Length: 235
Image (tube, rainbow, N blue to C red):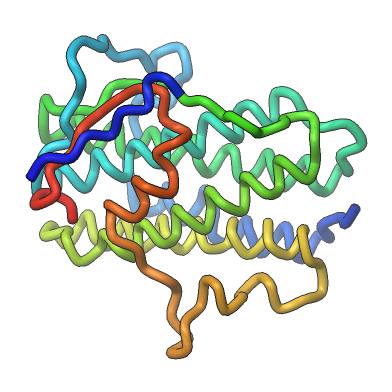
């Protein structure tokens, strides 16, 4: 059965040790396993015609991940281009680090897909209804939702990947996304156990995993560009 996503209408600081925690899983980890191409913003446009279908098999999963990474990269681009009033230098650096990571993730999937298929998801447009980019609380709440969703998405989609090289890279990327999620949660609730809260870690000590259809339901409201996916292809 084919399902259609159609959304076309719709005070703590971070110390140096916690910033280094992010950097350990950041740019170096991804670049070490990849040859990333096409990272320039001015070379990042695709022609958009009919509603795009993500496809099936590994291509469908790569396009699915690419859609989510486009969303995260777009969100953090907006954050770093207009930091909220009163932001600390530590938080500014954290968001800048995460922004660079997400751009690398996004551009990796673009390059990986371009290398194996003509069926590459176009550049998407997004909407942020209810998000106040001038509010620290709003930005942190949105970042938390996106990062938690991203981790759960990779965890849930991994079992559908048949190419082991893709699976290894997905494992590296989700480990970085988990660091992002933990760091954001620690800013919101410093000194607490929220970084590994029981809403994201189950009784077996494992990260939550969600099926693609659950992720679409959770994140679909951010997508202004409509696209479709076939349930048997990615979930």
